[in-house]
Amino acid sequence: MILGTYVLYILCLIMESVMNYLDDHLNTAIEDVIRLCRYATVAAKEQDIVETADVVKGMLDELGLETTLHETSGAPVITAWMDNGADRTLLFYDHYDVQPAEPFDLWDSPPFEPEIRDGRIYGRGTCDNKGDFVSRVWAVKAFLKTNTDIPVNIKFIVEGEEEIGSPNLHEFIEKNKEFVKADAGIWEFGASDANGIQEAWLGLKGLLYVQLEVEKLSHDAHSSYACILPSAPYRLVDALMSLRRPDGNISIDGFYEDVQPLSEKDEEAISKIDLSEEKIKDFYGIFEFVNGLSGSQLKQAFYNAPTCNICGITTGYQEEGSKTVLPAKASAKIDFRLVVNQDPDDLIRKLRAHLDEFGFKDVEIAWSEGYPAARTPVDHPFVEVVQKANREIYGHDITIHPTNPGSGPLYLFDEYVPMVSIGVADFYSRAHAPNESILVENFHLGMKRMAAIMNEMKDW
Ligand SMILES: [Zn+2]
Image: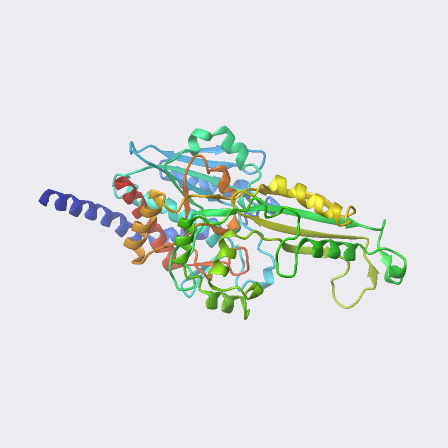
């Protein structure tokens, strides 16, 4: 008993030096976030990819990990590996690319010139996901610099095309299946909620993204001809209207066929969750959610409802003043968020069949991409490891969400490693939007929580 207490005391002292290191070097860690966010690594425009990949590899090299830059058909994937002779292996999945920063004029400071204001670091990529990546690097660094044994083996996979749907990650994973295997993994993002409570996401919805196009004329016409010429924008709008009922339910035949109800354990997990309904309404400036949803119905929609969303419509004249024109073409970008068991290939066939059946053979699916949803079970032991570490550092229970309503290539990892998604963002981080930022305090504690997770994994 006395020996046990002594061992515990020594272990606490060891972790104390790791945690002290992270306290003492917070500013240097923040400099790393700023350095990485200065690169405009916009995957959609293939910007700064090679340069950023180099910096990422350099940060991992500096830790003394065995790093490799894997060329793919697109942006390179960087891996890093440290065999500490431990029983368990922890894998980090991150990405070094970011979303486009437009519209630039809505930023209070330039998106790629990160700066700290009122305790927050502002800049594109701070929360999604360069800040997270740096926090993980520093958690590992704190063990190494204090000569503390890392109780787990470490693996990093950092890709550069997450924000465009990871089109080449499957190629990397296909060739590197052994590397992807680990006892547990930390997914790229995570945040605290509107009340400052940390959140863990155990899954991601799938995605089907399509571009619909209609072309009715060989070239734009004077709008006076609208009395005799067909309208591409109206065809598109009519086709879009046919996809979804006013209540948001998707009208495509068989769209919900494979949707499964949430399990009892999922239901139990979500019953404990406070979705902060009023704060979400405040944040988005709305008085009510779609269809007046609230309480358990709102949660059912949040965790287990697929969506059909118009991301943008392009046609005709939108500049200042008027231009009387009958546009020849119209196009729309649509995303469908998918839940577990829905197959994007099957749904694209159903979408085509729907358009044909409703008389929209002239509406072309110009391109599409997609992937299925994936999830780690709520009762997986790693979830408890994350919970313990969170309590140690943040002093409160992390909220366990069975899935996130967003999407990502989690399905590629599903059979090799159970993933939990946590990170250094917060409710006000504005991922993908102007004025993206993270709280310095969350970044600081996020590094420490990651170190605590590594430490807790030894007892699992
Ligand atoms: Zn993102």
